[in-house]
Image (cartoon, rainbow, N blue to C red; front, top):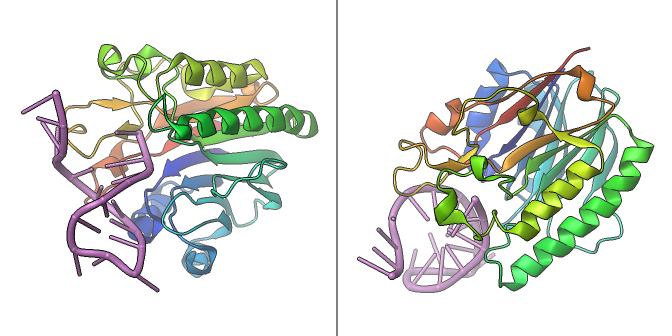
Length: 257
DNA sequence: ATGCCCGTTTGCAACGGA
């Protein structure tokens, strides 16, 4: 079984690339972030034709998330956003696929550590953690994945000195990431030996991809119960080489049956 | 030092992103 996450930075623009990717990577479940589509514009027919059931939670211009499940795998108990956390922004979609609770998140960016958006990010992260604690009891087989907008450690940053204390790298954000791990989740990517300078995002500017100057901010966390089944976790850089690419690229985890 | 790019907006410059 394979699960994946991809911040597509506008599904309207990236749908052909997504369909192309799915044709060569027929994952069982995929969560998308930054679809930037209201629900009436979601490409249901195109994705069904590609063999996927879809659930989505979108809004105009910003944010927007989706959960795709391969036909036959099942897509049940769909939840949009964090229960009990009033939020104008569409950032979470969850569903049960093939007996696994799949939670897709587009974590707030936070903009700058002294901004109102950072305060919102902290509140959002706390609400996510509180909700997940219960979800893990209800669904021991659980995967949390998405664009976390947090680089967990300095080795996840191309230039740690330049990024020290900056957004994505503050102690507060990293503390929240560690708190998620403390719930009994594991960073699937770090369960395996990985090449140094592995990133999931590269700035559009400054030839950052060509120079491999990026951040690892897209993550897949697996619950304790699933950990023995995790066989591999990789970042697929190939879509970042597309024409008109997203600035993020997919992360894929493989579980044994 | 600053912006560099990209997607979006009842748009044609400004914003949010990371």
